[in-house]
Image 1 (cartoon, one colour):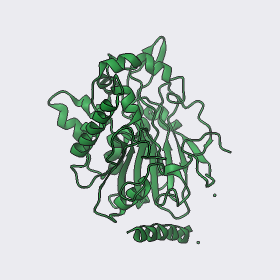
Image 2 (tube, one colour):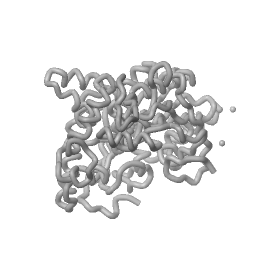
Image 3 (spheres, one colour):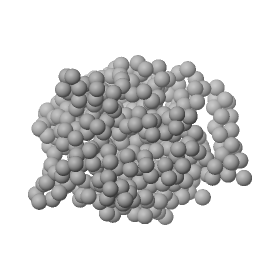
Image 4 (tube, one colour):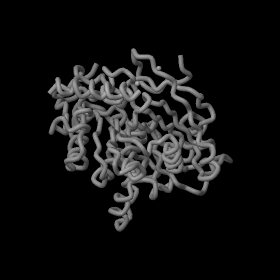
Length: 389
């Protein structure tokens, strides 16, 4: 099987080469030993004016583009993460940072390594692909479509992340994504959640001949309540994580900006806000998804557990595992790489192999159907110091 995998990766790279007849201002991914060419910023200025595709502070949404090798019609599209703003004051503070404004985005940036790596050893499937990095500046996982503004202390804020996402989709058509043979939709943390929320919409905007697969990293957020933990952190309104994303959904007017099959399923019960959570959205996703997730996710444990004892961490791990299996893996078209490391996002190549595979090779096998295996589970208890590098 390893030989087949190696040959497949080598063949893909050889085909790419045949189709062809190379110190940046910002850095988004982990370091890599292979030089990373600059990605170029694309500011959605026209869409900001015509369609309201703006960040929290009203500056235009933006993405970074790094072309693959000439002749490559394969794309990796990544939604940046960075939490959410879960109260008016939180959104105001966020609007003054790069997570709420594009005013200080550099013209060039390095995407770094990991899933962006141009080293085929680190990234055997996607090293030569076209790369898109969508900057996150709306505070709502690209779901907002609120035509009114949120006025906080005399400052006008805009909650229109879904408009940014749609503008990116439209702009990529000018770069011939319509001719793509393969597209991987991905993202980390809040961008991982965005992958669950929007992968079917991406699918609908691409040719039916295009293969589309979702690759959310650390985006399977559970709908849980632990008011004690939330009060300690002082981040959510009105006092727990469960209500935090509900506030985001309602304030952002996100009903038209998340998975519409999920919305229809919850409309009669009046709890459409639940579609802001990956675990509730997952059963309604039609596009194949391969989840990268830690069962002991450091962000989730910090935000939903009032006391992080080993027993509570193991209970969280069992909870994430069972809900992932019930809500995502119950669909045979989906898969997952569920590790036991204490981390959140961006550990491509740093998790010790599960059943002989790292994240990159497990995803490659899933994507190309090399194996019937769909679930790579690092079945360990917390803490596991030997699960990752």
